[in-house]
Image 1 (cartoon, one colour):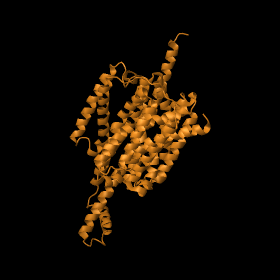
Image 2: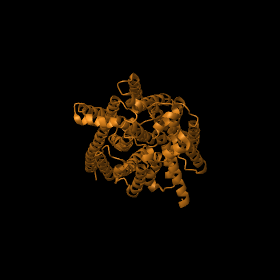
Image 3: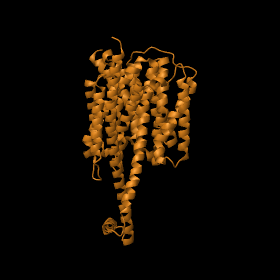
Image 4: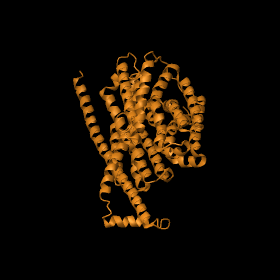
Length: 520
């Protein structure tokens, strides 16, 4: 393909990936800014993310089967037209209920975009490069969307309030639709993949994954044991997914090839996806949560996310230069070391820490994320392609499930850990705050004196001083909890290094044993 035309196809791939990534991250990065326009509380606004995630995985599997049976062109056109219409409908979502409905539909409508981003990146590459450069840069747009959403959000909110977020989503959707009509791509052969049993499996998959996504997204906010409906949804999820396993295990042409996914190689790959998704939540849950807890907003974090964006891009360029089937373990080891070092550096956080102290550590973690995903995808797609369309669909379930579900699972685990540790540190701090301590009494008087111009009564001044001291104690407890979270991620990264070493040793032993048993 001529260089100019190849560059256009590569740009189209990144555009489609950005469209899909920004569709999710622009909203999740600005939940606080959407509370006022949608008249929602902090807990209610979190349902926007839950609604999107609840439908996304099922939509991806359904639309992949549509593409396989009815053709890529029809799949792309219908999917993007629906996506464009849904993003435009966002502009008319003036209350929480309509916004939730739109986000749920958008979770399904956005499903084709990540697949199309892959195909457009593969289109211009020679066969020898499709599973190296193609896999590496096929996910680039979606990965860059995470820091880009944080960088551009303040300007979008300033220019158009919450409509600014939805307008850029609609604009990107229309550009993506134009790309599909202007740039043709190779059509994979059509294969009949739908059968009557899908009418049973798909509703069960939707109920199982949807219930799980809702619980993981908002369960921590309502608290796990305080809301009875959480237990009901968990029961629905467990029952639905159990029935899916029973049905799919005995089907001649299953949606998900569970026998293959339960093999050692696929279980190892799934575990590595989940492990790295957990570790990379150090940024989305740890660093961002820390700065939000001390009152910093997206506009004050733009330099930090600009550095994360540059490090992510540099990581993908580096990985593209060295990726090969044999380099995967070494790249994963380097990524784990970088994450462990970054989390250790972040564990030194105090109440005086600001984004400038996180530049190096977050750049290391962003670079590590770029070093992990392409080699893992290279191995997974290589195994999936060898098994045909059903193998690809099964691998897509693993990949998307570990990225989307794994993301909200990591957020739920780390968020719960941070809350528990914050309560522990708060109780320890409060135990030592007594008015009998002259230092505490002096601090209360100093805080109360700040209100002397508006509160001449000394008793009211002291009351405000007590309130201020309590807020500072809570903030200190929160910072100590984030220290514990970063240390937890550090120790999990070290455990990941040990597991990687054990897996590598086992693979070498198995290869040597098979070679010895194979007759010459």
